[in-house]
Amino acid sequence: MEFSLEEEHEMIRDSAREYAERVLKPESPEWDRVESLSDEGLAAAAEAGFMGLTTPEENGGAGLGNLHACLMLEEINRWDAGMGVTLSVHNSLVCSLLVRHGSQDQRDRWLPRLASGELLGAYCLTEPQAGSDAAAIKCRAEKVEGGWKLTGTKAWVTSGDRAGLYVVYAVTDPEARKGYGIGTFLVPATADGLRPGKKEEKMGIRSSTTTEVLLEDVFVPDEDLVGDPLGGFKIALDALDGGRLGIASQALGIHRACLEDSIRYAKERQQFGKPIAEFQAIAWKLADMATALEASRLLVHRAAWLRDQGEPCTKECSMAKLAASRACNDAAQDAVQIHGGAGYTTEFRVEKYFRDARITEIYEGATDIQRLVISRKILR
Ligand code: CAA
Image (cartoon, rainbow, N blue to C red):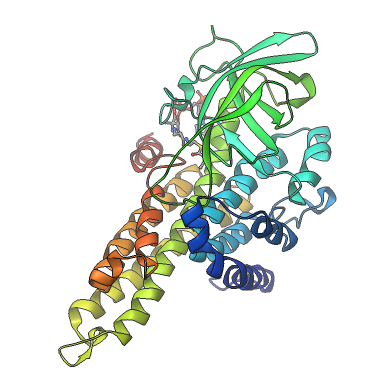
């Protein structure tokens, strides 16, 4: 049994930390205010190799694993959770999906452009009436000569207004039993009939844009259907195992931000003649936050390691997300409390961490969906 990171893991973590402190730390408050990442910030992430981390070297990526991606994402989310989810969706739900399920031709055509950052990836599964019940999607893919015609409305799409390539799920056989007549399609932003719809005004992760994506008779050639035309739902769920690791890593990053800022504040802030860190009421909160962070990290790293070994890991990915997102929200609550009135203002970043933390228990499978996945596995 080995608990220490390999040199390559440490290199990725250190380079993500350097990028995050140089680019995200100064820019994050402004991006939060204007509700957008800058093109320069994304370009710098691509330049650092973070958009092709898990893409094979032959397709222009770094050829690394899920554990590397988790380490990178914790560092990015330490300073900007909007950039964190943007990179998580791009890497886990688009690039890794293509690596795991795409044909050689699809990998060769799309991955180099995704890995270089020329194209940002988006994942279009959810619809207004199909959130937790993802198999209930209605977006329709009709077979036509040489391909498929897609019509429908996708909701809550991360990077919906700036992606270059959309992974779109649509019903290929409405007569099939639920979850069995769904296809996975690759749709470039340039496709006629695809356009971003309403942009959500969000509480947190505001630098990442979230929009509807509207599809009206969008033609997708046969070569951009991924896998079996009826088997897309399993591809969606497999990709989400990896996506949940990304969101669990986001929770680690926000949790760490809460802890680090709270330690600094508790040592500086004086009340009753001494730093508040010297009161057990504060010190014990910090101890609990630090312990919960370590526990979450172990769950996340183990699940990522299992996925890298090609082992079944659905339950472990859900456990990692369930525990890390819950602990992150507790930490955000305590961080604001430790900062008192100051923590309720924009002068300190903990109010932003508090807003950002909330989404980790909602997207890529809400907390109760993780419990559903885990309970089905242990009761089977
Ligand atoms: N990998 C591969 N196959 C899987 C799987 C996995 N992880 N999990 C289940 N399957 C298989 C099942 O074995 C089953 O196949 P068989 O019938 O052949 O055994 C099939 O897929 C269907 O599975 P279920 O019967 O479990 O399906 P269900 O309809 O009961 O739904 C669910 C399961 C877990 C509730 C699922 O709908 C779910 O995860 N919902 C949450 C949706 C979600 O996470 N959405 C996130 C949207 S993306 C997003 O938020 C991105 C963003 O931009 C941030």
